[in-house]
Length: 104
Image 1 (cartoon, one colour):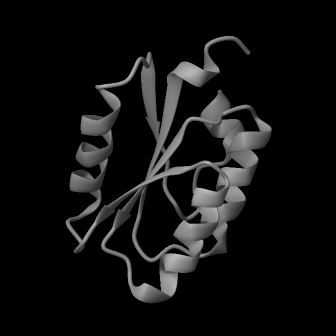
Image 2 (cartoon, rainbow, N blue to C red; image 1 turned 90 degrees about the vertical axis):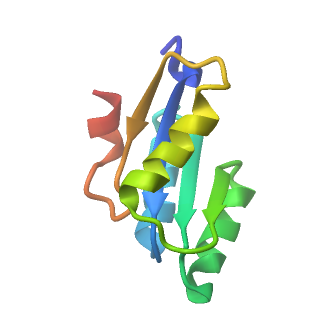
């Protein structure tokens, strides 16, 4: 679908598990490839998840300490407004929103 590369999927994440990786893979299968994840001060145990996402060309921004979901979204939007995009969709890292929901 034309224009999908101008839509940013913004995912705030605190201590995510494999569900986040599954979600990102599903989004990419739907040609939603412009994905930004905000690591909102996650523990060291979660860093392997973020490293794996980076290997899939996901942009990661990191808060050194937990600042809350609202601030994580603000951080992402602050970065996005500098880009040539037409919209931002926020998605929970726990898989609450599926890729088909996002595409709708």
